[in-house]
Image 1: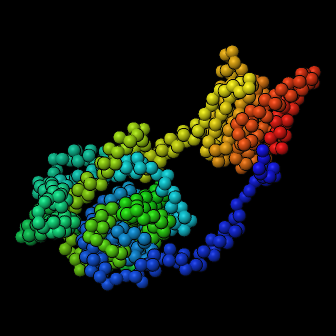
Image 2: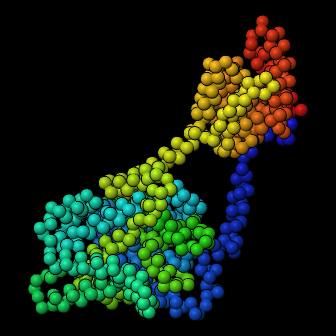
Image 3: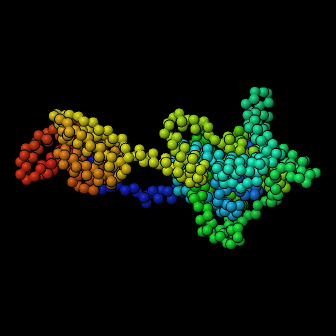
Length: 622
């Protein structure tokens, strides 16, 4: 039975590209598209005045953390701490317009700061240019609806990367925690430097740093205490970074006021005032005063040009999904929002920014209602830059180191590592490969190694498709039934062919001899040209083994790929209502063609083979 037009086998259906582009162009001008691109148009008209106080409180709470973390992450990036503050305010204003998740706060993060460290050599121009380029790349990817790219980065890879980043960032601050002057890059370098200079440990810094770290770890657990002041304890826990910085500044100021000796290693003078509005630098100067062109800067940034946008997207979308509470996250719109935050921030001397899980969690815990909370965070950071920068000169480096190390301890996803181990041991391979490569090589290349290892697993699966071979006997005919499912591409072509030939050859060594192979293809979604060529080659090899090949009830699109390669291959395809009908046709034609084969032996056996398949094809299309 043939319930389709035969022409469909010989003419490929191509997508209506012009129609799709026209529909897309019409949609671009619709009101709904504008609302999707500018989410503020959706929530602002319905904004309630009672939300304002909640958003204000949440924004200010996040702002206090953003200030301390901004200073710390500026240090992590190897830049003056003030650049962390420059990076912490503009994202909040822009995300209000383009962002879709009320909880996300955009700003500097430990991972991006650490990744920038090895490319900057203390030159802020590279960080600002990277912020601009990263934003442009992310916006373009978002406009092209390529948010789907993050699906290719698995949980084991991201978990391994996060672990390695935490180890690298935390280890990089161990010397500052003990007051040791160092300039390290990477996990091993940090610990080698620490132990080789451990005799230079400053007692005051070590005591302050270790005590601050212990206090931070204990304050995080305040919310677990069962007492009547739960709300107060919650805000103390959320404000722990601000409190230890305040105590550190106070101690440093009081102890240093009447002493010429430097009691603690301090952050030092911070440039006062707001950052100037200016274009991102497209050229800079190196340590020798020689001009470095735009191409030279790109060359020095290297793989970071690709990996930093990718990681920015991954961090931000992961946070959006974590706080979505069952709502569908528009990944492409989030990418546009993040990209615009980076582009606009680069005009204010910002380094690359993305969603911060720590600050987003504080935002959520503070009960924020809309993205307007980000504006209050930005305002607080701007006020700090305008009024309090002179105070930050007294921040002990040991205090900032303790803040960073405490954040890294809780950034590691311990539960997720245990879940990966319990669920599937093999998934530990990309996890370990990513973590080890990031720790002992570099963060950006380590991420690529993890993705590559994961891709090998995917390729390994694609080379062995859902393919089951069973030997059966019907009406005296010994046959092999092959069930093929899903999409079959070139990686599986040789496996399909070699497995089938091996089964037929194996049966020939026994008393039985397979005379017919049937490939059931009603569940095949698609094949490519390589698979089609291997199907034709399989038919020819089976003929040499005096065995016929029938492709039964294949998807028309898949069958068409074979028929367009070779019109004579149409004789292989059989379409019937049931397997019993197929066997009936095969049995009838086997009997009728036996006499034809005997008659044609004088003219060669190949003619008999062709006659048999042609007859079957004719019967199937009646």
